[in-house]
Amino acid sequence: MNRIRAAVTAIDCNGNLHKVSLAAGKEMITVITLELADDYTVGALVDIHFKPAHVALAKNITGEVSIANRLEATVSELQKGKLLTDILLDSEIGKFYALTTTEAVERMHIAPGDSVTALMKASDLYLSRVKRL
Image (cartoon, rainbow, N blue to C red; front, side, top):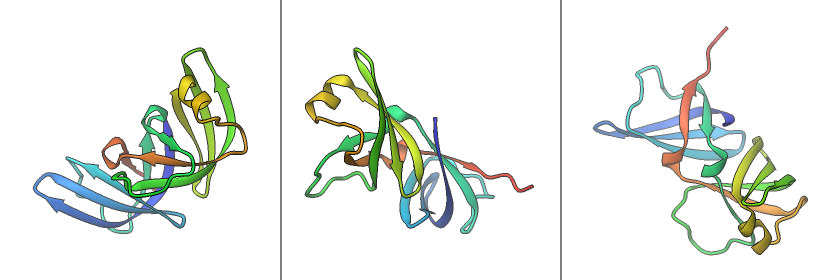
């Protein structure tokens, strides 16, 4: 499971549905969640968790895409399997993994050193509060 540290910058809600805006370094990330505890407030420090399989990759992306969370990253490592490839990405907010089909990696000619855009749906991200010591 990937983890990125961020700070809550805004919370919008409609009933039980919450849109949480977060700042991770200079990057802005959006999380959509059905439940949000009262201690998640603007300024709270949180960890954003997401599965490598929930990271889609694009090369040379142009035009509009409905996915709000886009992180520019560099491919650091590839571990190719017969069906799936584990990809270590290095971005402004840290390192994280993407898991995609080996077929897609070969079709896109993804290699270490390549620049890619990591795309993550707001509903595929989970939050946890950072415990204060």
